[in-house]
Length: 202
Length: 202
DNA sequence: GAACCATGTTGACAGTGCCTACATAGCGTG
DNA sequence: CACGCTATGTAGGCACTGTCAACATGGTTC
Image 1 (cartoon, rainbow over the protein chains, first blue to last red):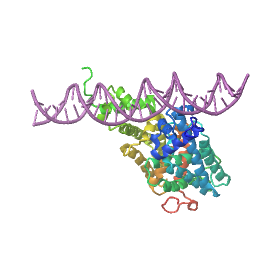
Image 2 (cartoon, chains in turn cyan, blue, green, red):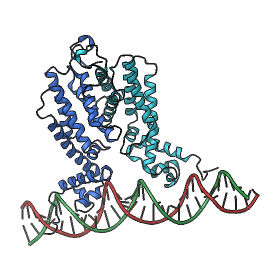
Image 3 (spheres, rainbow over the protein chains, first blue to last red):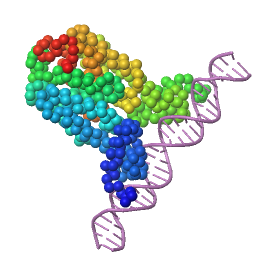
């Protein structure tokens, strides 16, 4: 059979070649030509499946977001307590970032995908985790999306700082800081200490 | 006089040309050759002052960190209340990022500067703000560096998410989430709700 | 003034993204 | 079945990039 002229599913093959490249040779080595070569096609072939480099990157990012989503899902499986569940969710996030540093850089690189379904699903998990805690009266009432954004910012920021080598042990640090953030999210029995009603401070 | 063969302070001129370029034409337009041309010098001249592209980027980042530091300093000037001061500090951070998006991307881009004096100073401001609040018994005791890292992660994460267009109004959002985070940092009068002693949760 | 050397220039090389022109083959339609 | 149409591949070229080596210039020092 040798190599058929037409590949069959080159698009998929290119994405996987790109993923392999990014995992092995790092974030900056991702060139269209290198990807094409790895997939065993000519340097212009990718243009039949992607508009350009940015679109291939976006596809790689989307694929990676799916991995992130899976990591978060696995981390919370079977955890019922709202606080513990939320911590586990963040842990799953941070873990994925630390274990797939180059992919994480592609996901949030200079060309982030405009509309990523998987990315939205990841954020949705955070929102639902907040709402779950609110329903159980473990977290204070308030705009669950905003509180989820706060959680996202924390895990995202920690992951990036860790990837930049600015932290010692990002995983351990998150366990502490995640709980600390949740102390602010917890429902407060003493009304003199702050929240009255269902709004966030200020 | 025309143009003297030797520039005088080409290193400085290159950094400033790079800054202008990055501000005007954006983050990705930063090429050594473009910078050289803007400085009115041949394409290989920069190599007499920088080891390569990465080092020039690092210099631009360092310069930008100095701007960030200035923004943070200006934001807290004359603010005494620990909570308000800490919020203002974060505000100064977020504001700088939102007002200098391209520079912020260089600062935390794929090639972050290894040892940035200004970056350390920025972080130091956060640590001291925490310690200041602890001394005044406004914030709970605990590892001030860790708590500062939590604050950094929040502002850094929010800034990046805002720059990626994933937030509506990052500035406003920070005011709310910053206060929310501080609720977790506040000293808690009711010992039944959590912290005992001088350690962070978990 | 002569030698030195930091600083600039020129030219080249491999690699990049992207484009156009051409080749191949799988498909539907007569 | 044969014909063409079109999707998908290739080959080559363009302008640009970072980097290096060889050369030019001119300020500084003995």
